Length: 93
Image (cartoon, rainbow, N blue to C red; front, side, top):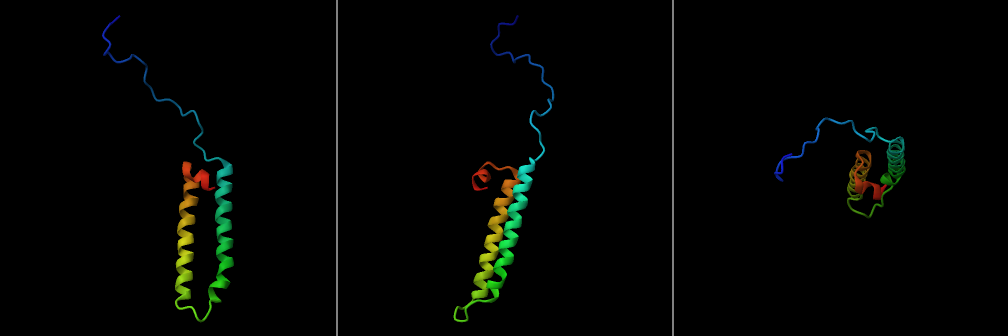
């Protein structure tokens, strides 16, 4: 037996099979599909209001387009975070 405290351990090192399944859970797939469906329904529901803007508000179409683009960008970020399994996305889901 070697009494040198600086010798490396003599453990067998080999590739091991992952202990957890790498498949995406079906509930996550369903949740993301439902979130995208809800976003699409909200987007379609906001289209009529997009064309009925007040006449006295300047650039109302540009402001509404900017709002829709921001909503799409934020939704994409959150939904893709849920899809990839980010820990912060669990709080938002």
